[in-house]
Amino acid sequence: MISGRYFQSITAKTLWFFTLMVLSVSALALLSSSYHNRTLVRDLENRQNRYITERIAREHLEEVQKEVLYLQLHAKAVQHALARALAMHDDTGVREILTDLLQHRTITEITLLDPHSRAPTLQAVRENGKIRYLGREFLTQSHRGSATIHLPLSYEGKNPGTLLIRYNTEYLLRQTQTKREQEIGRLKSLTSDLERKLNNHFHFQMIGFLIFSLLIILGFGYLIHRHVRLPLRILQDNLQIFFDFFRHGTGELKLQPIPGNDEFSRISRGINDNIQRVIDLHREVRNSREEILMVIGSIAEKHSKETGQHVRRVALYSEVLAKHCGLAKHEVEILRDASTLHDLGKIAIPDMILNKRGELSPREYEIIKSHTVYGYNMLKDSSLPLLQTAALIAYEHHERYDGSGYPRGIRGEEIHLYGRIVGLADVFDALSSERIYKDSWSDEEIFDYFRRERGGHFDPKLIDIFFEHLDEFLRIRKQFEDLKSAA
Image (cartoon, rainbow, N blue to C red):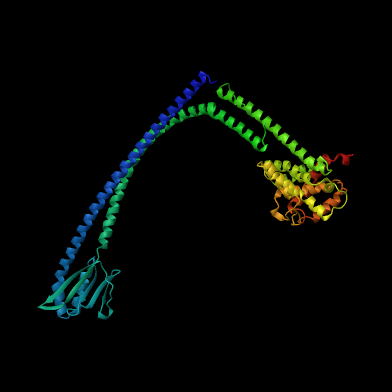
């Protein structure tokens, strides 16, 4: 039962939590103030940008209007002189007047048009700071300029032609843009200074606030670590140890007690005791399962006049092969336990065939081979992973790597790894042991056979593992010799 003192402790911790919340809200207020200052500065800058842009645009329009008016006045001033020079066929005077006009900064092209056909007769252009004249035969159609002025020429009642002036005000736009950029640059400098001053003020406030908050958080963090985080972490570690052991039978069972005499310590000790009870029960169940499987496998082997040690040796051989194949520990354990039922189907084989001395007839051999199918059918409908694995092993442990095995004649990787492992372990023990129908083979004969059947009867990788760890197989065989052989 939780004591009142524990409630007081919880209350104190809750007060610390709300203190942190208040400090966090204050920090958010300061951050909001900083954001508001930046927003005001940006708004002021945007307003000034719009004002500068509008003012510069108006000034640019006024400059363009003044420039056009000046061009018109200047062109009219030379209109009479140009008409006279054309009427008098004074080409030199015409070129001098046109050259004088082209000195203006905005005029890019001047063209004289025929009074009757309106076709160009003379063209003066300015390109790259140089003035060039083109006669009728060299006139181009490219118009240099963005606007035109048409001035009809008249001298003594005659029309010697029309003056076409093309001009461009782009340089005015460039000047306007340069001016705008300069003013906006000065504005940005002013707003940057203002923002920097506001930020400096904000930074001083934040530094003091953060120092104070840091001290509060450190104290609060220590309390959380001491009274909440550390106990919960130890509980989590203990539960993880429990789950690892319960699921896979792995891990060291060293449950950590929580220091102190508060509620968490007492709760932890109760949980640890319960975990220990569950683990003890699990060990008992697992040991019972192993014993039951061993007994069932031994019954099948004794039905064929073989000893129960065969079942144990095949299981341990399979464990060695599986371990060095890189299987996970829980897979190795499942394979080891399931392999004890590899010959369960022999229960369904008649004694007179199973224990016959001498060579079997073809029909009898087919009956013997059917023990794989019988074993599979006995186990396949189980929902337990262990018995499903046992069904697979019973079905495939007589398949051969080259496809010459039974019952299905599958080959290579089509045979499940479990079937290939138990198949090699079963053959090694069968050749090493004396049976009712044969004598045991010598080690040299077995090893020669294994080398010949590498890639034939057996998986080449498993044969390599067998010879690399041969000492483990021989130690198991020695440790679990049949009583008759040992005698």
